[in-house]
Length: 65
Image 1: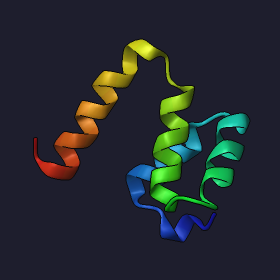
Image 2: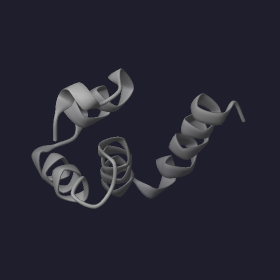
Image 3: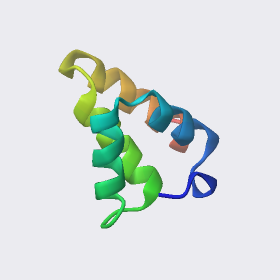
Image 4: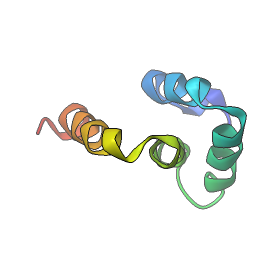
């Protein structure tokens, strides 16, 4: 995973993941885009109660919903 290919927000999320989450993101990047791999790893590491809020914030930023 090349940090230069990540958006600033995605790089920040990646840096806040624990070592296990970072390894998972790197492994997922083999089959997904690097940004998608980071988002998926973050979602998997996040408590269930926070996932919905995170998804809504991503939707708002990405698509203006």
